[in-house]
Amino acid sequence: MLDALRRAANTRAKERIKRIGLILANAFTQVKHANDDETEEMMRVATELSDSDVEHLKELVRIEGTMLEGKHHIPRYDAYVKWEHGRWGNSVDPSIDSAFSKLESYGLVARIPPASNLNTIADFQNRYVLLPKGLHLVNLIREMSVGQ
Image (cartoon, rainbow, N blue to C red; front, side, top):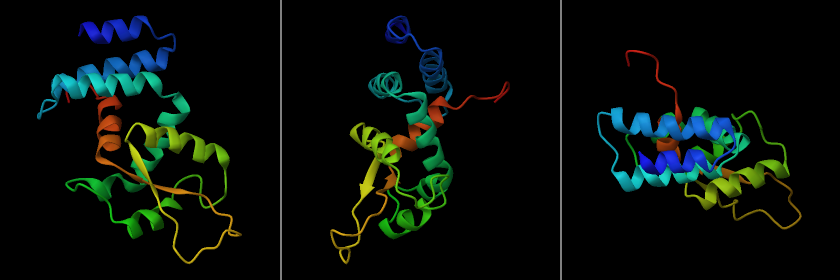
């Protein structure tokens, strides 16, 4: 609780403060309680992510999240195919790479290696797969309705 207050005091963005509060509240109310280290790590990551980063992660959870529920990983091919169902489609956008590279650095997603039959002339958008930690973070920052 003290760590959350300290993080909120050091954070200027209201949405980031809200995410810290949601993580703390949801960590305490989950049926399977998160351990303190895990909660602290999630608050740290939430403090570092921009609103845009979180929106990209939420979109990936929307398209790949159900494939990860009850599992430890999503098969590479399934994630590769699902990627195009995101709002980004299959267009090449450097801002997508930037956001997902940041998410990857926190262990929330992983880059899917390109097919081995591509040459260096091919221009394509990198694709990413959702990792359990990314799904868990999004679940922790979801607002729960009253009575849940």
